[in-house]
Length: 258
Length: 230
Image 1: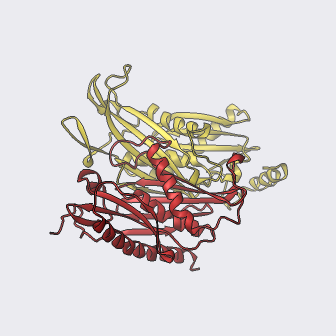
Image 2: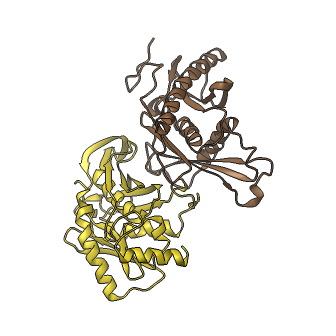
Image 3: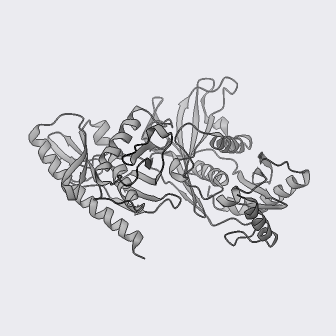
């Protein structure tokens, strides 16, 4: 984005008007759909405006990590599909994909949203691994928040596959759902000049100076944070972003059914 | 002797089909094709600059297809992202299946990229991919001689099956014969076979496959018209 475009953007933000007519702290319409893939143990589609993201859960029985012998494993991976943005290329995940998956992973893991001890089948020998993959379908901005919501939605949809003699039968699902204790919601605020906006369009993503991602549980506790962008933030700024996230999180959480 | 299919279909019956054009607004063209629990989403970008430059062809543009199963789309374990030998081969075959209907002579040094992603699979993925990609190419406004449609045929216990599912393909070991068909040329642009059939049976299979492709062609055209009716 060139200088003049940015001046123009700042002028309209001064009046609390975005390119698409929204206010600064306003999300586009959010739609969550569950069970979009018969192949996965759980799956979801999230649309935020024209941005669309799929997430799917696969489960497997594996050995636990030596430092957590009685806990299940979690893995979150993001595929920024080249179908979703002309600038994305096929190949191993780049910086952006890795950051998205790691921020979401921490939001789920550190909030203890999944009761990992209930994923233990036999201590030190066998635990459930929960693998969540994000696939972007259309990038119209804010892939991070859309992906985080899709991951949570897919987890709420997930059911254990049937097991007989220690072998998984993926063709049969049981009625048993994943043991979820919390629903952390991830919201990212972008600072442009002195303004904070949420749910950016691609054009706004080109203009931001810094951003801060906050994951919040139901009791408004912060379970993960990540600062991005080139400019630093003041402590006051950080407080403001948390306020914004706390204000908006309940609306997004309503889109998830347990 | 009528074979009993796990989903209760008749031998010559396809699974329910849904087709939609324009599912990825960011792409130049896009489409979704779902047959039973096999779903393919295709996005087209281009003609656009091709990098690295040594891949460019000064005579005409090239078509590059990328077939990819989403990690959660397999009917068993998680599929590792990033592609493998199978997905590379299928990508190449899909390109060859689509190429005869395209006119890329007007786009020297350029590339048309087709990305095919599958959120759920139950056999017949390359055929669903071709059907989706063909609609997406038309949606991108590329000059085309025709659409391409595809059908995954099967042969099991001396009986010809249409649109085999993964139970028939993997569990029961049916001979699997995917084919792609171009109606206006009356030609087949993709053909594979894994298993065993006599020439006589193969000829029957090709004839039935062609008829099913013509049915799919109608569905594809309807989906395209649906998007452009306004």
